[in-house]
Length: 381
Image (cartoon, rainbow, N blue to C red):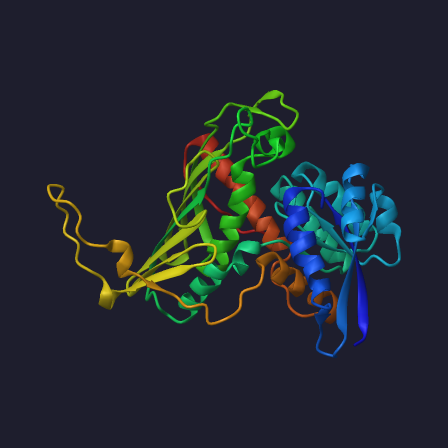
């Protein structure tokens, strides 16, 4: 079967997410399955060129996977056989690299947040649109099995009128002294683009917007609960970024969403993220993979009585939503959409403007926390 090679400059693959989810579980997984079939019978064959600052790390990955690499981004972008630029760098380095890619005429797919400010994100979106280049922002949560089942319920009218959404996300990230931290130290330095609002609010925006309704206001409280951490080299540093955020969001149609995000909480949930959706006809609890429902016809009638022990098995009263489909890795699924978008021109709604709205949402969340008030979300032009 004929292959169509697509060169992809992958910047930031020495990091945790860039390597595990984007390189190994997406691009290399597509190659392992023989490429990505297209409508005309050819197969899209991704050819990654790894880029980064550490030659040692890149060389180790190149030897492990038999791939090309370079520490010279300009040289990689200048090649005629590279067509897409992908960015999974630290946030503060992203905008400059994307501007170089646009100038080189490359299509761009990037991790979020798109940039550090709404203004610069809008500028990038206008620039790449003027150049006529394909563009996309990673919105992986939409492709999780649990949320795809939730979307199926919404589309099928299961909930009736949706009243509220309640989300819980997070886990305990070790301080780095007596156990190594699970996240890089820059995540806890605001000057390096760190902070849970900047990291997670763009996720919550596209989940709320694309599953439920446009978001119209944000009220947020943030905290830096752990003020001092220990970095990868064993040095103590001051945490200048927020490590927990508590948000209330108003959506069209009167839907109220509450989402807690924290790297300073211990997990007493079935999954690291869970969303409970309550509607007039039924409720659902969706996580990364599972989704459980309770219809109004099977809803019990609890009675509050603090003087007696609980006898109702509340968790057992919910029904598991069946898979009814095969669910691939969410990052890989969106990569496949973007590759087809570039090669075949198929629709791809998760573009730079979707990324701009996520950056705006995070920015307004920080403003709300700083000013201690509800902030309405203005329309973007």
